[in-house]
Image 1 (cartoon, rainbow, N blue to C red):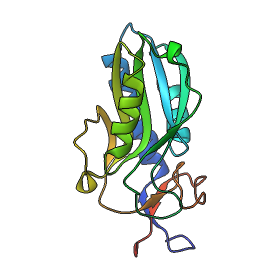
Image 2: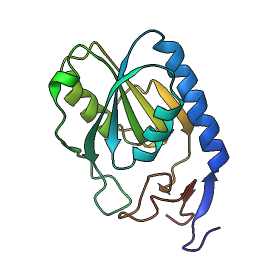
Image 3: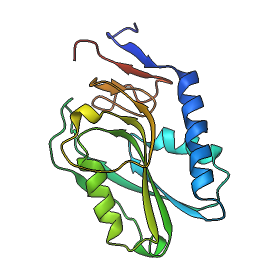
Length: 177
């Protein structure tokens, strides 16, 4: 247990292994096709960077959208606010891979997917590092999943609690939360 009451859930070594495996799956599915990688900020930034470095598939561009559903608490608000300056011309007619940190209620996946679908991509798939299916409120499909986890509020590897803990190299949870 780390100071602050954090307990290790996924080690740095296991994260690296999962990212490499996800990259292999994506490379297999997108052989001969260039991708536009869309990173959901802020939580997925570290995961998306690590994944990008492992991909052999051509990446035409890396784009960013900001989707927020938590605010400063540990429970999602139920609504997703999407912002950013994503240029629709970079999405239209392209194969898009959305990269997110965690699948929880499904609201972020649905919101980001709908937002990007309006830009008419050739295809759109969703990759998430962590999945908490026990929390699902919206029926959505995740095409690539690194880990299925229990219902813990997690931090580290880009994920935060009120902007804290993002820089931790592994994934931790608060056992009492």
